[in-house]
Image (tube, rainbow, N blue to C red):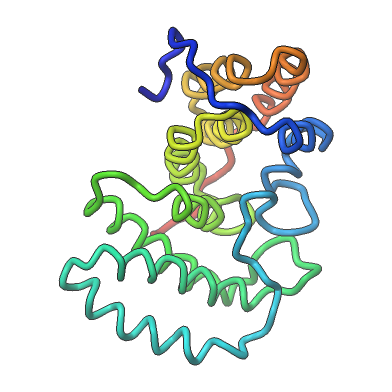
Length: 217
């Protein structure tokens, strides 16, 4: 269960990553808000490069659209990643977000992500990380959709860092109940020596305010 606070089973939390999260002020840089690079830790896809490989990506998209129309789950997953790749190819290393010219690609990635969710029984957490970047405040700025992706990641990874991310996005979405529960879970999963710091981190992340959601998508 997502918020089964009674269970005592914990996966070992990698202290290195958690400590990094705690050292980065307010947690917002760590999770991609206010940082110099779009997406923070979860951004495993942005390379800041140009469009050299875009032609191949676009051909792959054309091929996968036909497969996705027939209900292919792998094709839907590939379309989410490829559209996000096209969007990131339009950014620079110094950018803090996406240009307006990338919004169509981001919107397409979001569309195929939602279609994927309707076809799968168990969502892929690595794909959820891509969706998290698509809906982040630096991209489409859709906190509720970002919260949904963060929840999938937290369920699968079941560690303090993932639940801290959920606290942040739930807070941005104005979902105080989920933010409260995720905060409790994050503290519960943290090593004993770091629980005080995690409580402070949760408090800081809850200061985030719900931001206007972008229209469309």
